[in-house]
Amino acid sequence: EVIRLSAQMIIGRIRTIDLASRLHGDEFAIFVSNTQDYQVARKIVEDINTTLLAESARRHMPNIPLSAGAVIATCKSSYPLLAKQADQALYEAKATHNGGFAHA
Image: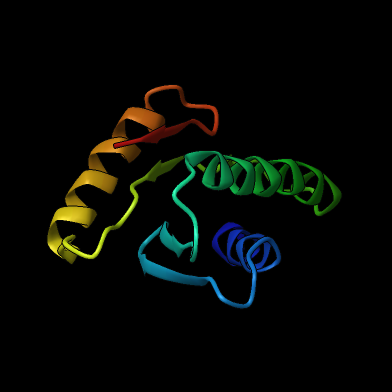
């Protein structure tokens, strides 16, 4: 139920030109188009966590905040490198245990 709610909150916070995907388990990827600003990603994560908190309370579910690791892709980026950098940033963000955000 928590994964389903998280997916709903992600989809509700991105634009139609962006892409969200569940990678596996409780990991999601959000591809934000047309930006080079990490603050855009940070704002999306903050909005998702604010909404998750309210909605999980309304549904009498435990609040499990979303942590995020962000990278900015360039035309020379490869998917394996981006995934590795995002994963490293994610583990840094998870260290806070409260919906952290980190970027490469």
